[in-house]
Image (tube, rainbow, N blue to C red; front, top):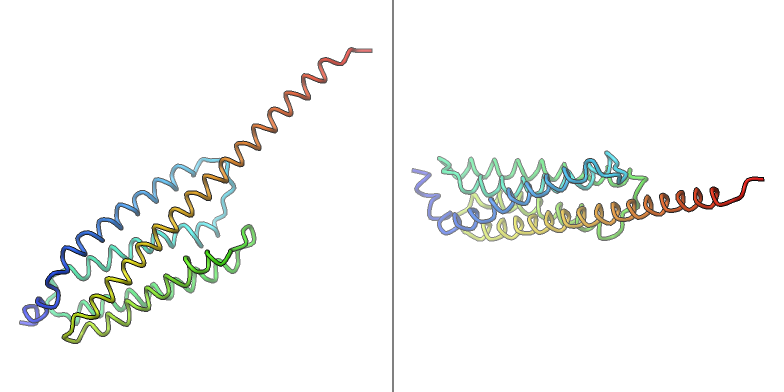
Length: 201
């Protein structure tokens, strides 16, 4: 059977994908918690900013989980796994280009070099690597699996970095907004006190 022929190629990788898949799922859950916590905050939020920075992080975590699921499934043939993996990677490549367009259209925030690297360049490299290595997986060598594993780890680290970047940015913005509100309130109280202390003529 083809399944028996493909099994030796996948041996030893189940533990790796068993670790990386649930890790991505857990981090995805934490990202939902962060978004829920800042939903009602007074920090100014932009739908385009969410689409350009927050949503892609969820997509990266979902991609890692998907790669782990695809390469852990008992496929009847390795060809099916290759087609699924390559199709998903190509779709994610197109999505990165969509994210690039969204970042270029932002006007409330000026992206810096770090944003371009972590939100566009590295994800594009990771998905392109998975697509190419997935195509080469149809051979008999295990080298493409190591390449896919490295690219998947890169995606996981990209997601962790971007999630942390978003969380710290929102926290700083929330702290700044809270401090500004406190200063404004203190100013109003001081003005009211000063006005009340002026003797009436």
